[in-house]
Image 1: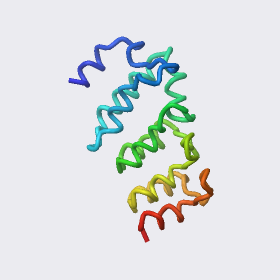
Image 2 (image 1 turned 180 degrees about the horizontal axis):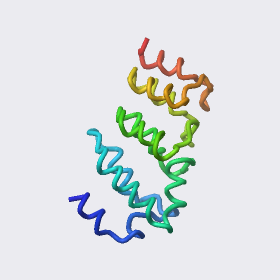
Image 3 (image 1 turned 180 degrees about the vertical axis):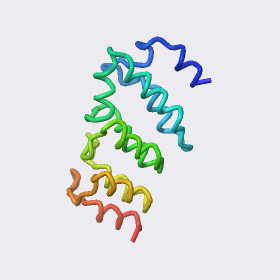
Length: 150
């Protein structure tokens, strides 16, 4: 149903009102799903990308911090969506050092919290591996220890 609606939707309906924190983009719903919805996410991203008026928004959600939301990359890592994370790096040039505004976590911090070796390998492959600290002065190694992923 969602895929059919995306094909027929007007471009401005895919965008959100940045000033209104209560609106959540369809993309966030798709990425948050516990089951990886790769085809659906790709369709939404491609639809946004094709719409000239939303190119700026695509750059914001893929490269820059949105203070009102957890970055899509971090949501995908948190849910262990391996293929989706790879697509974000490969096809959408997501910022490798994208930080969460609240705690300053990098992608590597989020991956360390999940305990997924496969996810760490993807981050290493796309040069998103570092021992930089978050706002709490924790590195990914600290996070892994906190969550018992020795």
